[in-house]
Image (cartoon, rainbow, N blue to C red; front, side):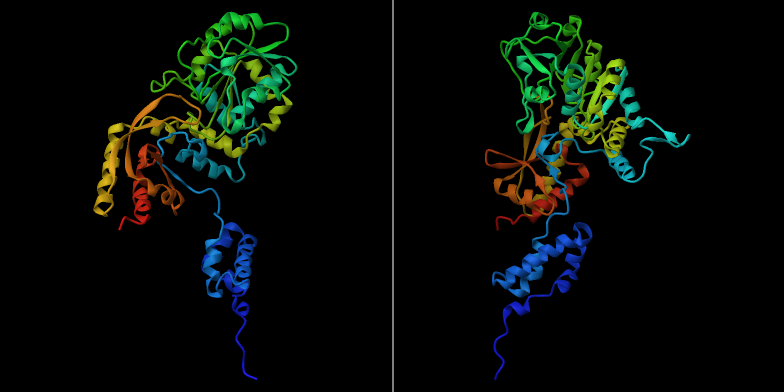
Length: 434
């Protein structure tokens, strides 16, 4: 009998042979052997079903490998604090601090005495030094947690008086009333959507009042016939005033005159200020609590504080951010429009030399991330055809811009200058018009 045709399924490469491929071996080092082996098995099965030629199994397995983790994205949107991109990028100092803190550290140990020490004392001392008006400070894992801790400790089973115009909804459908009421506190709404007076608050106070809550509407604006009661007036009511300033601005910034900051809010009479660490402060995700010594100590000792405790990596990044406040966020906010224009023009000229036509156009950047709504920052952008948007977003080095009226705008405000060449290379990888 003559030899019949070889069953194609017998030509499917063996698992050990595939895993020895340098590309798959490298992936095993970062993704883990079991995950890579599962990808290989799926490619082999496709070949056995006749969906894939046996010679293509290697490349198919490589193409199907999952990303090893979060991908670095160049933020050319002109949105300084882009929530979908993780808000504030950490400074070089903060990144180094996180790497150092990844091992064993003295996060809760006094090396001099060999005894237990106050957890995160470096970060807490730096926060206290940054806002001397705060009698005491505490840190939890995000801004919402800071408010939840305050509501639980001060008003569980009692009332929190708040203006109807400040019952905000934050990202992903989370609403302030739901968040606060989950603590067992009851909201006592006063005033109207557009106007709330001191008399409205005063009329709502009673034996069940836990505190008055002042919320900065950091992701929207109400204009026209409006009136709001400032913290300075609320502080005359004789009850604690908790001010959620949201964005984490510790001291006033002339660029953002309408954005409340922790220092001035405390000087105005707030008993407690809550804020986020990963917005205008430019640090890691964290919830900051600053205010009265006795009150902050009460919050720190509450059982819920343990569940909301930050880890050593966050504490390290926060301390580094506070010690060296020239963060990427601050750099982007205060970038000189003239310097930005020069960078964009250089990028345009280099692309032109490579045969790619682009334009330089004025642009308006924004703060984003729930901070300074309505503030526009003069900027400049590289304008490309809209078809560049998807390949730049999904390429080896993702570059995210924004599409405006059929054009892709790449605003370099939030792109480190040393990454301009990476933007150029990414654009050149997109197939040209030819």
